[in-house]
Image (cartoon, rainbow, N blue to C red; front, side):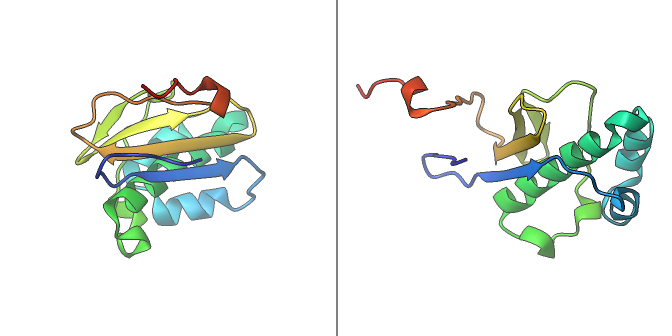
Length: 130
């Protein structure tokens, strides 16, 4: 995945959905109480996928912010819903969840001034140059 902007700092993250036996321990260390409550309220069969939803959103924000993991993950609190976010504002960042594949999740964080976002799955989908 690439993000192309005009002078803005994007953050992107992609994660392959895979079994993670210790996801509860990771979540309790890096997720906020609200995120943990939301995650634990999901059906057991969907928890690992939702764990990765939270993770890709947090990582995208940390990358856009530029501080990376020097900014503690448990201080980045995502407001979540049962449906993917087409656009969600998190403090200074607007977030988009991308992809409809069952085996991976992706997110993009861009400056909150952005109000629209265009995705292309392949070069053939790109609009022609003016």
